[in-house]
Image (cartoon, rainbow, N blue to C red; front, side, top):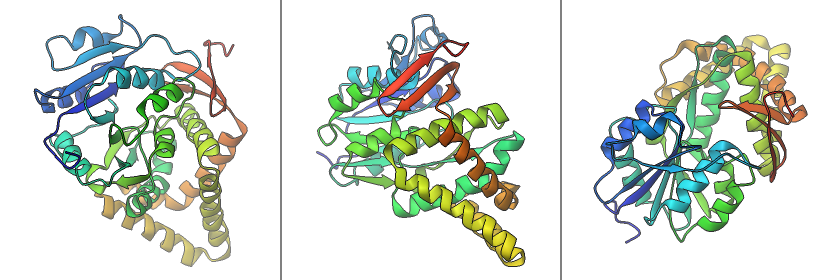
Length: 314
């Protein structure tokens, strides 16, 4: 039954390393479920680490014409056999009740919709800290208006999304979550599934991540790119014209977003300079099409035109 929260699921997790998230999910899957860990090659550390656990390792092979994550996710989805599919990532803390919550919420999702959420960025790097407030405001908005899909949490029912077409397109792109959103009739963005996602807050790591996110928006949501430019411009203009009004207002909105999401970090105080930096990074992302991601370098020239580059950029 579509609304049965006890129905078995296939959990697909692309990763080369066995992380705490893998152990969390291995402990949460039931006997009728599948837990598929998709990696690049047989020598990846996760292959040996998964032995004796509830996880089944799927070896995807080296990516060609797509990102390694999309390649691994495609291989995992091809192997999955259950009618309910749950895709997630290995780089954030899920919590003991994560899979149970996904099951319960997926049972309530309207036909043809995808269940997802959004991540709250958490960084110890100086550049990353500046970007946390604008990210939190975006997440709170996404949750409020059911407007976001995040690769860390994507759940849907087979037959309501064309899985074969999705898998085929994954193998020629670098954006898994926004691509799924294009194939769904609607999105359900759950507040209870919001998680803090640790990110590299260094300049190089931030630049690569912003190029990837900006290119994805440019190819799949150009209107969203315009919105992401207008808000920082408004903050900058307001700060210059009326700083004693704009600065407290923007900082207060960021603080409210943190409170709504249950985030306890002081970085909401960096909201105004963070929006200025976000605008600069958006411009950088529009001007660049190369980025690094989990040890590989890519050139992403259009939605279905991805080149896996050598370390020297060739």
